[in-house]
Image 1 (cartoon, helix red, strand yellow):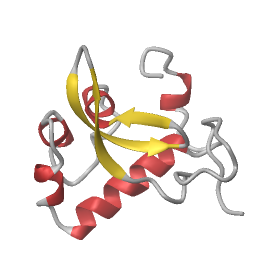
Image 2 (image 1 turned 90 degrees about the vertical axis):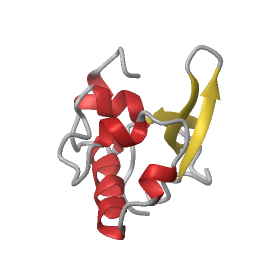
Image 3 (image 1 turned 135 degrees about the horizontal axis):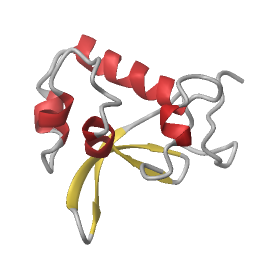
Image 4 (image 1 turned 120 degrees about the horizontal axis):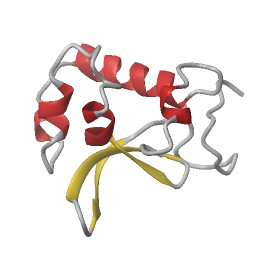
Length: 107
């Protein structure tokens, strides 16, 4: 079964903790934003970076995820992608880094 997330989602979702995709979503007030998904939820990577939750990554997450496309992120190397996925897993896993889970403004 693997690790579980504190984010409530259907057990048969295409995007569980073990399959966090990268993409872009749009909401009217903020335009296009870089994101990952868990269950039916989009997770705004720019908001996480601005809150300092991606500060330990081996690149400037604020600069990379402020853009409306994933081009800057995709131009990075595999270790940067792996580090990003590992950090997102830490933030979204049940019982792991609880900073995102308890921050009502980010949720």
